[in-house]
Image 1 (cartoon, rainbow, N blue to C red):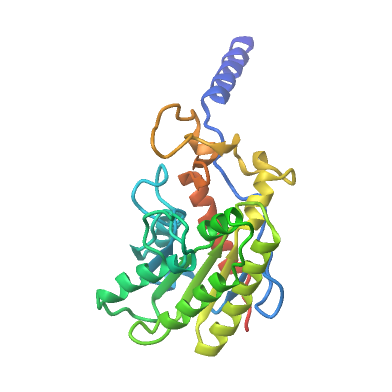
Image 2: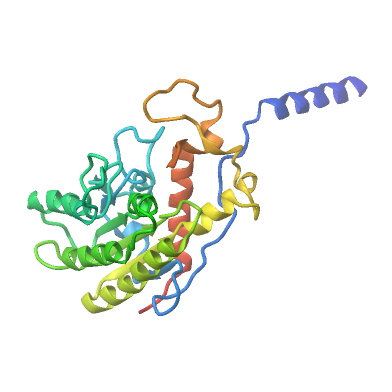
Length: 292
């Protein structure tokens, strides 16, 4: 009996040693609201993901393909969860409208206007009822604004809203739009707050006017919770809130545990974080249903 107990104890200890750590997971829930109120997580009419056969993505490095992270991005996971095909037009470093930043050296990336133009120029027809358009901008514009002494971003927010109005008209006739915001990556300023407020109110207005289904996901809820002390990064399963690589130019000194690290390179999520984003988006879609 003692021998059996010893063997079982040994097996238990060995198993405890080799079992993998839990993956990164959500430790906060969406903060739901409506477009008639202050910025919050909202789903005004979007159906369950299984309703969509195509996901068309516009954005910056958070949505771009091409090895920006160490694996799939959040839109890859989103399309996979929907069982839909993905058309990704996002570009790392993209702003909304290059012409809004005269004299500023921007990343050589297609802005939102150029991404949209390239998309439309294909002349492909999409079923408006089964196509979901994701739009994730603001991070790069916010960086430029802060570097410029806090330049006003309300015109950038208005440009996003205007492009949604254009997408909802001929020749695209889009109907389903998911907008994600994370401009400050866990930090905030009067410039950023004004941007989000203008964007949020504009989305409510344009969605109601054109009869579109619009969702808004505010990732600041996740980022401030990870980077702050309540509940903090460990509650999400992270071992580090930093970056796995010092820069995108080299893999030298790569971290030992990217599956539990917030960023792949500074400001750019690991694929584990991208999966977390998708999980949060799915919760917003299911929990934050509202009307205009």
